[in-house]
Image 1 (cartoon, rainbow, N blue to C red):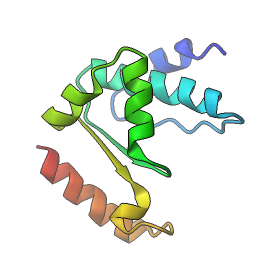
Image 2: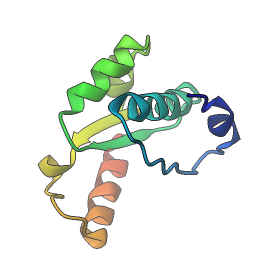
Image 3: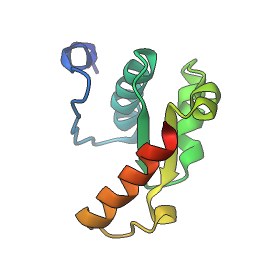
Length: 105
């Protein structure tokens, strides 16, 4: 699966929506997106459906120092349900994201 050209075209602040069919495809796209953002100094908040450790393990296996990024506040990974976001509620989501953003500064 070739996705590099898509990642290179994204500018800071842009988002990516990719409908994946397999876990491998999800990790490939997500990993490239996150690693590009982290490598260029972007702050990242990832809301995981499953255990946040799954993403951290994947990034670590890909050679990325996710522990350093988490310690510095550049990368925050949280389980969506742990934030009380079991259903999509835009106002609640916005408030929680603003709180996390202020905390990461």
